[in-house]
Amino acid sequence: MTAGYIAGVVIASVALGQTGASPDRIIGLLTLPEVFGNGACDRYSPRDVTLYAAPNGGRAGTIRVVTPWTYHAAGGCEGLDVGVQNLAGTQMRPLPFEEYDYESPALIVLERKERWFRVRLEAGSAWVHASERDEFHTLEALLTEGLAHLTGAWDGRLWDRRDAPARKGMLPPEQYGPSVRVVRSSTVEGGLWLFIEMLSHSGCDGGDEPRVVDRGWVPAHAASGLPTVWFSSRGC
Image (cartoon, one colour):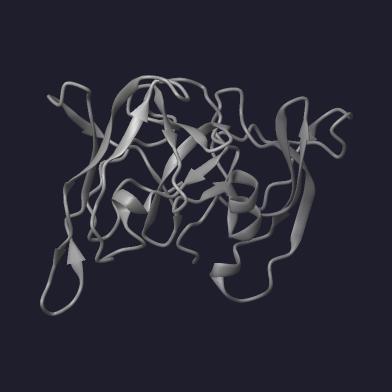
C-alpha cells in the first residue's frame, strides 16, 4: 500500500492497519476533487466537505484544505495540506488516504449506502455524501486493473476451490510481497474472494515474462480486516 507522503504534496496519512482502530474492511476508494483537485498541481478552488455521523444524520466534522498548493514560476507545485476539523473548529487532525492513481489520493471507504460512503478517519470513521464529481473505485476494480501483490496480511494459504480445504501457496523464491494477477472475484456469504495467479517475478523487473507458479482463491481480507492483496497506484 502507498505511503502517506506524495512527492511534493504534504497530506497527513495514517498507514492502514497501524492505527489500532477497527477491523473494518476496505471496500474501495472515493475520489474527492473538491479538496484534492484532479491530480497534482491542479489549479482548482477547494471546497469544504461535510462529515456526518450517519447517512442523513448530524454533522461530525469537516474535511478541509488547510494549505493550498504553492505554484512555482518555473513549474511544479508543493504544499497541499488536507485535514479533518472537529465540529467546534478547535482541532485539525490528519486525513487518512490511499492513492488510486499516480499522485491521486482518495478517501478509504469502509461501507457504502447508495451515494453515502463511510470513510476511515484517524480515529474511527464518518460518512460522506458523494457529489456528482466524486468517483468510487471498488476494491475489485483496483486490484484487477493494475499491478497487484500479496500483502503481509496474507496467511500463505490458497484454495483450489472455496469449498475445499486450504493448502500452502507455492511462493516464488526470495520474493517479498509476491506479485500476482487477479483474474476474477466472487462474493461468498458477504466476503470477497479473489482468484489469483502467483507470478515468478514482477513484470517491472524486466527480463523474461513472469511465469505463473501457482494459482487459487484467497479471501480479499484477513481476519484483521486488512487487505491480503493490494495494487500499485504508481505502476512500476
